[in-house]
Image (cartoon, rainbow, N blue to C red; front, side, top):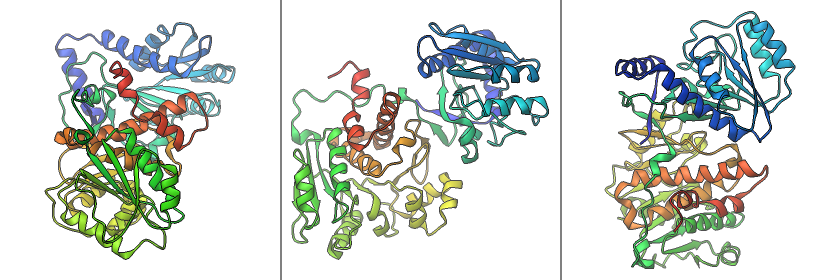
Length: 473
């Protein structure tokens, strides 16, 4: 299950609850160190040199335990009591990875003097840095550096995500965020509004397909997408949808875009949109919006989109241009999903983009409550998912490689392809979170194996991670 996003005080209370039951601090630190080591192994190749900087506190102990679990790597531990001496160690190191175990969440005063010089040396080393629990010098509640902070490639935080690590101002210091949730503590005693998604949340999703299933069992997605100059969005959305394996996908596109869209899709059925042509009776969900930005998009198509949003009993996913068409309205009994990026979210509410970035949770709530009680997928670093009330979920997968044209179209199609399947809609929130996580996980897999990749590569990988972990099928 997802883990709560907590404060430093809550983490300390959680630890005290664990110690009170007899859990030993050494046991937990060994588990924490093993989690760091797993990431360090992933970040390096056999034979690589790793410099482990271990401070005097428990953060340093975690780092030392990590150093002992790096088979095939040449790990050198520096017990840092004199920061000036450690500066020389850092400047003389030319290996593959530095592990930052100097200070943890207990740091309460600004760094100064030689400690700042050590942080500067680390930040100027141009060597990837792996932070133990929190980048040294960063306040895990506010996300602000205390004097200065280490700029890391990856931060492995323990137990649960700390709220300050998620602040926009913390991103240059934290790098990629990962949670080592199971470090031997008792169950977390806190429930919070904001939660961090774990891969384990989808251990039993999707369920096996019924052996007697047929195309009708797995739904029929209708996609209203594509216009002249933007036909690629319709193609990418359809291909993304097909990776979710609904029974059928039908694309309805503008007359001028039709030849280009039809020429690039074999499995999906492609039709020129016409005002008097109803959607197939077998449709089980509708995606509206990708690539509908051309000047020739008929007014009647926009009117149909609004009518479907307001009246259709089917699940509707609105993306891209369609987001600007949605009128404010009361909650709908039917499933509704919107997938804005920050700029689109700002336009939907008539606010500055800066407010969206600074107040993601409240903005998501406001969109959901004003647009038919819909689910909102507020895209960005750690995409936020939720509704007008209840829990909010941060996505933990993905990387900056997704900042390419077409990524959102693939996600919209993939998400819609899952929601088109009637057998899976009992927990719509889980379906949505799964689609977003898989989309990011595909990007992570690509980034791990190659520097340059595009949407065709993303689509090829998309959807296979969970099946692989569940033994195929």
